[in-house]
Length: 232
Image (cartoon, rainbow, N blue to C red; front, side):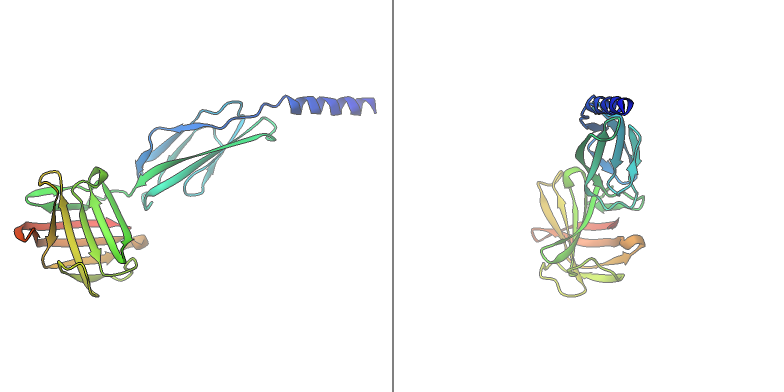
């Protein structure tokens, strides 16, 4: 009986000596493009075990993690969570941090205007004011192309849209604008006529192709705009 009591006391002392961990970690940067690797470095104290939960739900138990973002990631704000444990796993500390993921830029992505060809850095495809809107531009969306489709939901069928300068679109119509901010005092060039083709591809990706659409700024014609943009 005495030995059992002594053993019980030892267990209590061992448990009491377990220090409370404090979870913490860093990432090599805060903004990524789909397909890149996130380097997660543990900065916790008194931690003996680790459980990472990554944006796609996958988990890791190593102290540090190198996580490759899926190239089909649709982008946005995503969360990484780290749980740390004491040696006997009875004491836990948790921390979560957010990162920003941008959609992957494909080899075919471009738009050209006024003799200049642009490679988008950021793309999105979202519902805005009742129209499905596809945008592509530079950092902080400088010089973006903005395409507004009549559809109030992401297109699921490939089709050709007729371009109109009227924002009050009808079925089968679209409007296209280019905000030429860096070089032209922020003029909004709107396509006057033409067509753009929307193709629904793998995993619901939308590919939008338009060629030599005449555009105008303030009623004055000015060259053409073309592009090939794929995004979710």
